[in-house]
Image (cartoon, rainbow, N blue to C red; front, side, top):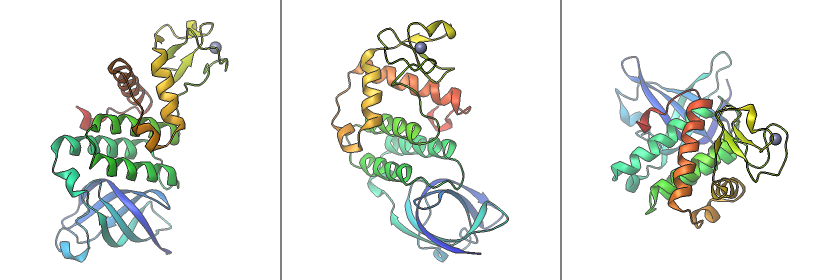
Length: 242
Ligand SMILES: [Zn+2]
């Protein structure tokens, strides 16, 4: 059994048997990893972290050859985001982000970009005056960097870049040009500002995205489209959002 070490963010945790925890970690080196922390509830001092949701840790684990559940032998806290935890609203936002990351990321598929934006979003959430903006940027980045990629830069059906009268199709997962719009009777009109903002966020880094202005109209439409997209394509309502 190889022994591996990596940075890891706690996405989700649940009790296992009398004394242990099973934790879904988003790791820097190995993608999403399920880990068993034996005995942590009986003797919390066994680990140098309380393994709270969305905490940033360094873990050492034994990679099992026969199972996707691996034994974590060491978990050391790097950042507990204490200031973030003091604000209930932000804890709610962080919980939505962790649940979404857990839902969209495949198991054990390395994605350092997703790890990076998740850590960055949590760090920003701890200091921001606009938590909703961080949540929106995170969702767009996560969907575009994971396998889901909502399609906004050309017609998803014929690849045309002429999107003057494009409509958003939930079923197709992106834009349909004027000629193709009839393929989905449920396709809906979408503001040009919404398309431009989605593309800007996908193509730019977190710093540039933070300084981007968004009208309330565009922000509302983006949030609505993202929520519909997530519900439809991830086949799972984000529970913490309710
Ligand atoms: Zn088309």
